[in-house]
Length: 251
Image (cartoon, rainbow, N blue to C red; front, side, top):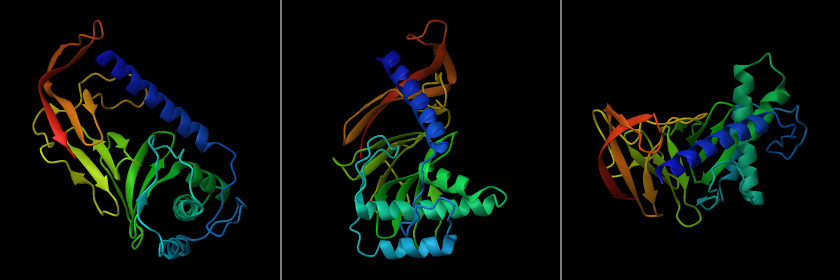
């Protein structure tokens, strides 16, 4: 079971990295919020943010059914408008940070590296990705500030539940619709040398190897002591952290 989980996590990590690299250099044409498909056209961030605010006026907050968190979801016309607005904002930011680079490169990166996960009246949950990593952010549409959610593993439950579960090394959080922050799952915070990471992770982009089972309402997860190494029973010759307990948490 543990060995299967490890292989699964490693394969997913490799696929995510491969997907990000392919997407970043894909020759797709990037639409702007106005529907212009000219890939050399950029709007400034202030204009793009104002367009996003206007497009959110009549939107009903909802999660997008995207169980992989990788932009594979089929968007409605309304959702696509919000997605295009975000692309324009991030393209403007990339271009401002790299004024000597061609505008088209930042439009392509913004389209392929900005994924819409949930739409609120004020706050949007999105994923920003490059060739190195993908990370969820809470985007404040009034200020334009994007707040990263702690790194780790994430699980999208839409359409079954309007919630995302995030596993960090020492904490577990959830994100719900139109919230300004992620919420700590009660009882999930660890301290000292305790960690949800098993101490064994092998593969591209694998930073965390938890041992868990979950449902759409709860998670049962092992707790390890990072100060104590023991033989890994699933991998000959390898070591891992010593298991010190198990938590079952509802969210």
